[in-house]
Image 1 (tube, rainbow, N blue to C red):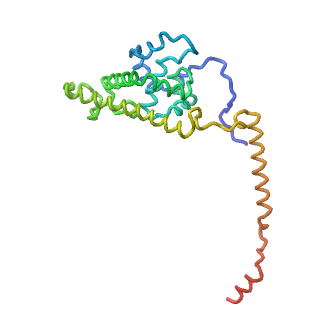
Image 2 (image 1 turned 90 degrees about the vertical axis):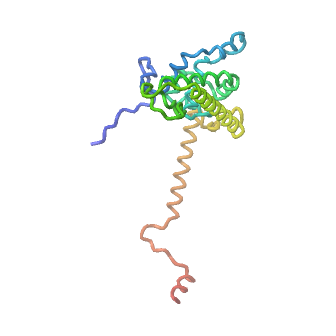
Image 3 (image 1 turned 180 degrees about the vertical axis):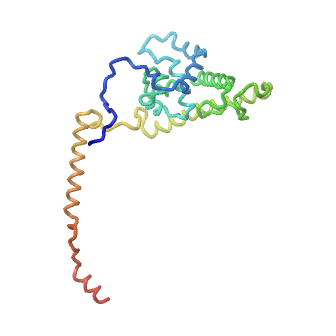
Length: 251
């Protein structure tokens, strides 16, 4: 009797609309970041678009800020990797509401709004710190490693608050600087308009891709047959060259 496997249908079509939120746990960090950003004033960014009437409508600044903040906090600094996550990672897709800005758009948004983003990210870290979080992704929010229970320790002194703000500002500066450095290095490595993981043209479209796969499979099978023909049959004794046999006999 053959083994029964669970259903696997890669081309399955959903008959009812699907909510991506159903695929992400309710306590996921992405939701927390989304809610925090929703409480911020993004006018420093949105005002720059107020008089802009030409060109295609830009991606929503709120979405872009959420995606960048989440990415940098979990250690994804590369704009190319952020683009990849926006296509493949549920948390990113939930934050972006299925929008998929490319890496150049992501990088340009950071460059165009660098000062505003630095201020917004600092606000986010301070808000998160105030809620009792010790870490936001990979970013340490409390330099003293105090447990996240405000009732167990006294309020910060003014001096301590200043020190913490300076430290958080340095954290934000490091996040943005790292993103800039990574993007510049990848631009040099791949070219400004290349992601670096593009498939060859003949492998992009399914028809030509299947043809190439078939040709590669046939080539591998031909190589395997040729190798098998060259191997001595099982049990067949290897014939030793006469000079080698004589040399062994003498020894």
